[in-house]
Image 1 (cartoon, rainbow, N blue to C red):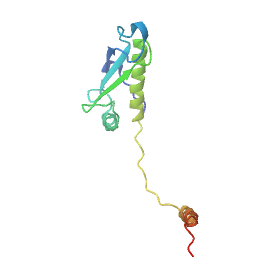
Image 2 (tube, rainbow, N blue to C red):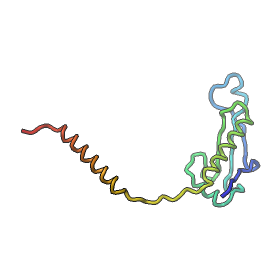
Image 3 (cartoon, helix red, strand yellow):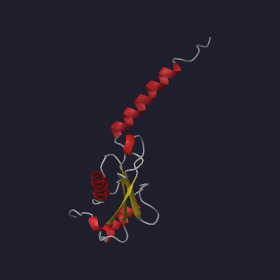
Image 4 (cartoon, rainbow, N blue to C red):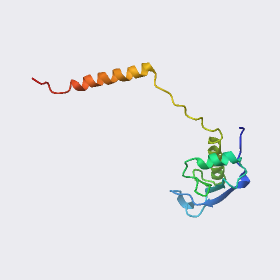
Length: 133
């Protein structure tokens, strides 16, 4: 599968006030960006939507809306760009499906090493016991 970019027209931005210390402007300037992206209503491929909704991420609501808050920068446009980049990184993360895990058996040498280690630990612990008459 090739690259899939999120259409900025499908993203909804809301300007909110940033948290934390910020000096004189902190209580009057809304420089943090709240990004909302409705996965189900987007133009992403259907299989990608399902993989995105299956991700265990607290930023994805039960209704299938991704909510990202960006407040690292002091200007709203930079925070919006940061939020969009984080959304794109989330989409890129599910772009390649995860390979299924194949069960394997331990090798004979690894079994032997494990048992030798257990024997050595057993001897060490046996040496700590009281000596009986």
